[in-house]
Amino acid sequence: METKRNENIKDKYIAAVDDFVAKIRKDINVVAVVIQGSLTNDVVWEKSDIDCCVVIRDQKITAGGFCLDQDGIAFNVEIVGRTEFIRDLQKSEGGSGGHSMYAKSEIVYTTDPSLRTILDDCKKIGERDMERSAMVTAGEIVYYWEKCQKWLFVKDDPTYCRYYVLKAADAIARMEICLAFEPSSREAVLRADILSPALMKKYYHDPISREMSREELTRLLDDIDEYIMSKADLFMIPMNEYLADGEIRSVGMIAKHFRTGAHFLVHLLDYAAHKGLVEKAGLPVRLTPKSRPALEEAAYFIPKTEE
Image (tube, rainbow, N blue to C red; front, top):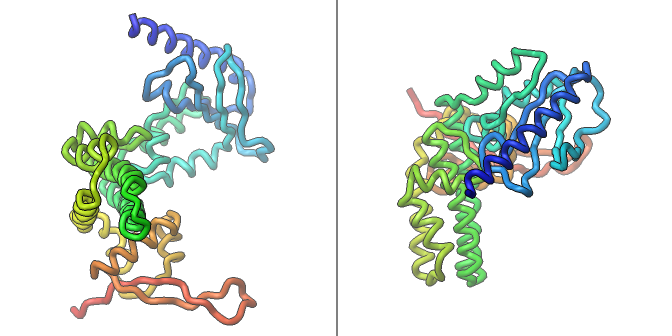
């Protein structure tokens, strides 16, 4: 009975998409309609909305999005130019949130068949994609691991420490999915439950289901540290290649090179420096070309070995 009910709801949502496309295809500015979210990769229910990206011919965009009503269903519509859409597809990293979104999306209408080819290519995860995504995800694990330590050892709050353990568990789940060459999702823990059930029991099910003593949490944090280091040979590959010439590079330079934010990256770099995987230094910077005196930005390098 419940399965039949869900099928009826899904049929209603599919019909709404068809009606939406029938209306929007009359607009010569529309290049493609891309459906994302629950309708393409999950279960829809009465309160589901529809995430939709409308790709238009390149032009000045005055409104980046709308929340439209189609047959009583909310359509969260993002408006994006064709060139920007292609650029976003091409720069999305394998295993990243952006990659996951595109990998599980579906073009339901387009006047440009090449977009389907580009989207299909985006859905593939190669070795390089996986390595870079592992590096980014490792930075998140380190960050939440450090938060766990703060709340356990500095603020003496085991309960809130468990909260950050769960955040670390989500990042660990995304690491395991990345290692399986699969795109991640918001429900990463559920997928990792299948791929790595023992890890998820340790880092997710046990902490969320019961109180844990300070001693148990201390051992768990040691285990997370060991988990991070067990992946170092993988997540350090991109960094080793970039820093192989022995040049000192600031966090900003490294973040720009990898097209990622500096927030999690600096935590990973400090962790790597502490473990002896990289060396830490500093580079002078000025906030503006006219600023004085110069400040110092954290920087890192790998000593060049003598051949």
